[in-house]
Amino acid sequence: MNHKTSSPLLDSRLGQDREELTAIVARLASHQGVHATHWPALTLFRADTPGAPTCAMYEPGLGLALQGAKQILLGQHPFVHEPASYLVTSVDVPVSSQVLRASPEQPCLCLTFRLDLQRIRELLPEVEPVRVAPASSPGLSLSPLDAGLLDPLLRLARLLDAPRDLAVLGPLIERELLYRLLTGEQGARLAQIATSGSQGHQVSRAIDWLRRHYHQPLRIEELAGRVNMSASSLHHHFRAITAMSPLQYQKQLRLHEARRLLLAGQCDVATAAHRVGYESPSQFSREYSRQFGAPPLRDVARLRMADAGTAA
Figure 1: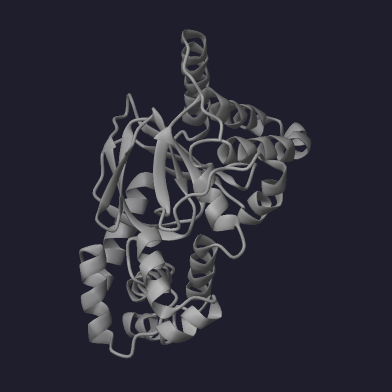
Figure 2: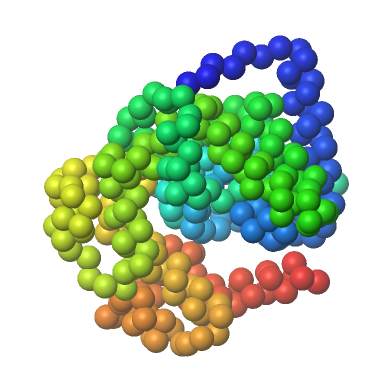
């Protein structure tokens, strides 16, 4: 792993680059909410006021807070994401996220770059060996931001207004960005998840199976067998990475999908409960209320009202 040292010149460059990237994000994300860009892996976020905690599913990705601050809760572990740090999520994890610091004059501005673990896996042989991360490394972590990582993100953002250039240069910049991640402080964790046969990779496979079959009954012995682990080892490493058991993780997936179905107006509460694997609508409503802070219909009405206010 590379050990970077700070210097006045590097610190000055980091500050200047961060200011420029902040200005680009503020211009492109001109109103509250999540904004897609011409580069599919790159999304922007803006909030003009602090907010209540919201539940979300974080995919493998790199997150950058450019202005303001957010708190992210993984299980019972809080992470405060501010401009001096970058966040890496190595597996799909359900979290609670809350904007802590934002105002119309100084909005909370964030950038997220979705990570392709297959591309990371392909790049690994060309990268100097990174030290091995513990098998129990959590699936979400913060590190100090450095100029080497910020630079390719800034160059990619500059190209968002030039789609032709972006189509040619974007893949090259993305490759450089993945290289910077793998040779930085978070590289060992990403390598752990991406390396076939590692316990982190086995847990990642278990997560992938759960995401595709969340509506089916969960049998830990069968899931462990699918990823070539013992049931006790799977339970231990799964909890260490996601801060929850496989059963708790499945419940989170079910509730998030039910919420999506209800928001889309595709079905009523009882049908949504059945589609995601609940046999008892009353149990579904109880667990939904515990998760999202209100019964299904009230929660969905609140979310639609908030969306309408944001759009206005």
